[in-house]
Image 1 (cartoon, each protein chain N blue to C red):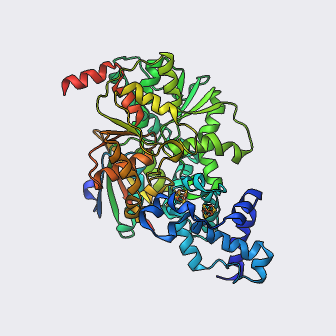
Image 2: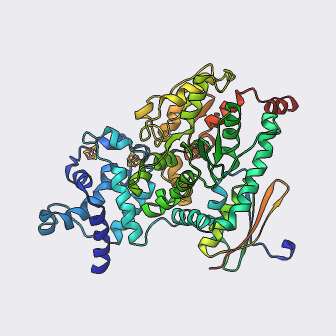
Image 3: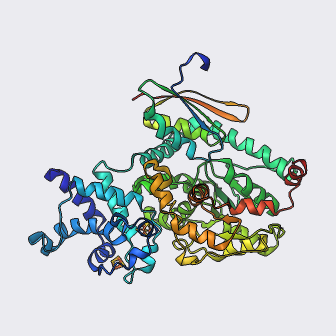
Length: 80
Length: 428
Ligand code: SF4
Ligand code: SF4
């Protein structure tokens, strides 16, 4: 499904410990245009709650969040 | 800035005013002894970072609005209205401060500049100038607890993955990571990731501890942001959990500010005494090793040094237990000079590691730490604080120090007789 979505920025967050994956997504959200999408790949399981919580509390959108092997993959859309 | 805004900002100062703060603002002798204590000033020579200068910005507002002399002859007493320039200066000097309180240790009047700057943060927040990133991280933590049902499954499933690793590491298929266990002795409050859960779980398992893992992380960005209400709410999450589960003690992971928030500030914020003890995980591990409850060998034969995180050491009073643990694990322990209360701040505290625009400054401010690490000749530098380790890892890379920066719990489990670790080593 994610193959159909245009990704504006890839973020490799593998190896970063929480809360750094969430910090990096937050720092980079303004590097994509409004409506743009970040694809972030993390390995710390804490990111599975942290990144969606950050997105919801800042009014951005998690288009998908899932586990692929030992990696956690997020599609985050900048809403405003 | 219009008079309404000025009234709002001076109102914040008025609300925070008490005898202690008034004393700090009145008695500075401008001796500048604190300048040689601040790692940021020492590394940059920039007056923005001189502790007394940072506090002076608040002192100028105080003189204008809270003293008669400053009100009537402001020029003579350097009294000043808060304006956009003052807020710009205040933002830089305040959010750069790591809250290490080394300046207070050396000040002849024990002026707590970090406390004055916590008031500065409240003023900046009221002016809409609080640090955005720290505010977002605080809000995300609060959102997670306010909407916990939305996150519960994903959090528990993460714990289950770590539990599978624990079974492997301990070689015990019945090893578990308990959550929500009523009547456990200990509620262990980790960070959000696996790295602070797995080693503690292995230690608790080997020591036969009755424990349960908190659903919430100990990190508190509300504290770094400077909003006491948000900070209290974030800490409430696991403090309420501890009350609900009826534990005997709350044990905070290897994190500096979280320990200080839990051990010192939370009771002051709520005005209530905790019905349980609060300890740092290293106090518990030290006790286990000394009681013979946890068997470790002296397995590390390269020189090891120890960095006192400011919130664990100078501001938390824990100095000997971590050193005793490292001595139990390593044949060659080398303390830094100076150490304990006089330890140099590494430059990574106060939430600054999350503020990307301060990255270059932060690394530059670690100059004293770099000199200290080099002087020890150590190959491993252990430290029980995530922010300190992140900063020292950055220094290790940029300054080519050639050391390993380690959490103490990681060293402990390396020196435990764990079947899973042995298998991994043999397989490697
Ligand atoms: S050391 Fe204390 S009294 Fe001296 S300038 Fe610094 S804050 Fe003021
Ligand atoms: S608390 Fe630390 S960083 Fe802040 S002014 Fe004092 S010495 Fe400098």
